[in-house]
Image (cartoon, rainbow, N blue to C red; front, side, top):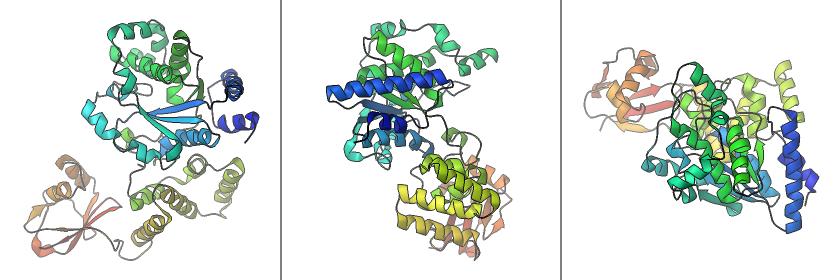
Amino acid sequence: MPTIDEQIDVLMSGAAYGDPQTNETMRRELKHRLNEAQQEGRPLRVYCGYDPRTADLHLGHTITMRKLRQFQEFGHDVTFLIGTFTSLIGDPSDKDKVRDQLTREQVEENARTYAEQAFKILDRNLTRVRFNDEWLSTLDFADIIRLASNFTVQQFLVRENFSKRIEEGQPIYLHELFYGLMQGYDAVAQEADVQIGGQDQLFNILVAGRKLQEGMGQKPQIAIIMGESLPGTDGEVKMSKSLGNHIPLLAEPWDMFGKVMSVPDKAMPIYHKLILGWGPAQVSELTAGLADGSLHPNEAKMRLGREIVSIFHSPEAAQAAQKRWDEVFRGGSGVPEDIPEATLSAEERVTDLLKRLNMAASGGEARRLIEQKGVRLNDVVVEDVFAVVKPADLPAVLQVGKRKFMRLVSN
């Protein structure tokens, strides 16, 4: 078993708080808590929360999951917390406008596969899965008043996203302030020793969670705030489904591989660091190889794509995904061999086809795709939103973007 100092070096790696003093405080408190737990013969209680605002987690979420996994490997008690109640509001931490509120039915449907997705990283047998409506839904109005009495309005309004909205004359709704209270109460309800989160969770974990625990007579949790965020497929902005630059954990192998291949070359080092867990020496070697030309960016990306698909699917799926990518982008007809087929029995508009075959989410999106020259029929760009496909034109290949294909055949 590693020593406490060795555990701390691993568990605090990648953490950042914006100032050295807070970093040192958290490191010192973690050492004290580990010593204390060892004397008591118990593991630390560690958790990270994930709000099911959408149905799929993405690669960016795996950064905190890997930190949870490190705690598991040191024998600590890890909880994967699904925010079935906090999702009803939605975290305003990194938002410059109010979020849409979800219904309980939407949240429950989104949460259905969260644990299974997490087990791609976490040890299924060592992971406690909980849902925060277990305790938050039981609070009454008097409870909320008692929780709120631990904070001032100013503590919330000085947060960057709220102060920015005030300057711009944008509204801040009262229910948005409740989110920090609810997340703080998650720590109280679980008597957490450690909470893990990203930079956007700094206030919720370091201020709201710790202060509320102290107010409720508990020892304040140690906050481990991950210092780096994974950029999305644009290579610039933090990966986010709302921005459309994410790589879902539920993506099909060929789509996951293709999305990795679309990531800009400059993002390769941070992807290897945050997703594959490469150390400084490995990352430096990769960066040097890309810089001096001894390593071609596409070769680095293909290797990365294979490893990522292997993690979330299988090595066999990774090889098949690369084969499909090669067929499309490295010669040949540009059309994969194993594309799905759909029948066409009568003349049909391309926009209706795209919607019917789930190649576009709506008729409006189908029209936009055509207007943006993102739709091809037999490798010819479809430019007319009223274009039709007739049975006499079959067989034909309908393509959306670079990775969506459908072979149209007659009955």
